[in-house]
Image (cartoon, rainbow, N blue to C red):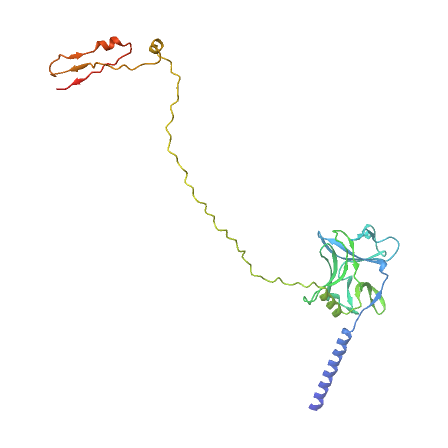
Length: 298
C-alpha cells in the first residue's frame, strides 16, 4: 500500500515537471511575427525635446486625406510634422516611445533588451540601439540624419535596416519594428570591428634640453694715460703805454750807477746818519736811476 502511494506521488511530480517544460517551451517560442510595409508611407524622425536633445518619432501615412509631414532640404532633411495642425485620427499614425516601436533582429524581438535612442555624434544625429542589460555590448547604428539640426530631421536607415510591423497569427498590429535580418551576434561583431582602435599614448621620459654654455670673454682693462697738467701759457695782452713811455719813448736804458750811495750807522744809539749820493751820475743821465742804499751794522 505504501509502495503504491509513493509511486503515485512520483508519477504526479513527473507529469507536473513535464507540463512546466512544455509551458516554458511555449513561452520561449516566438509569439509575434513581422509584416513588410511600404517604406514610402513611413518616416523615422529625430524629434527635438528639452532644448537640444532628440528622440525617435515614427509617423505613418494611413490615409491620403491629408499629408502627415513634409520634407525640405538635405544634409539634414528638415521635417515639418503637419499632423499636429489637424485631427489626424485615422489619417496618420504616430509612435513616440517603446510602446510603439522596438528592435527585431534575426527574427527575434529584442523589445525591452534594447532601447532606441537619438544621440548626437559630431555634426550628426544617430539612431542607435543601446543595450539595457549587457553594458559591454556595443551600440548598434541604425540610421543617421546626415547633418545636425536642433529641429525635426529625417533619419536615413543604414544598409540592412528597414521598417516592418508586428504581426500576431498573421494579423498586422500597430507596433513598428526597426528590423535587420542578421543575428544579434553578427551585428555586435560588426559594430565592434567598426570601433576606432585607440592606441594609448606611450609615456616618455622628459628630456631636459642641454643649454650651450658660452665661455665668458675677458676684455683687457686698459688704464687711461693721464698726462701731467700743463701750465697755461700766458696770454699776450695789448698793454697801453704809460705816460712816461709816451713822453720819453718805449725803450729804456739801464744806467750804471757810478757811485753808490751809502748809509753808515756807527752807533745805533746815535741818530745821526751819513749818506753819500753821487749827483754827477744823476746829472749826467736823463734816465731814471734807482739809488742803492747800504746799511752797515757795526
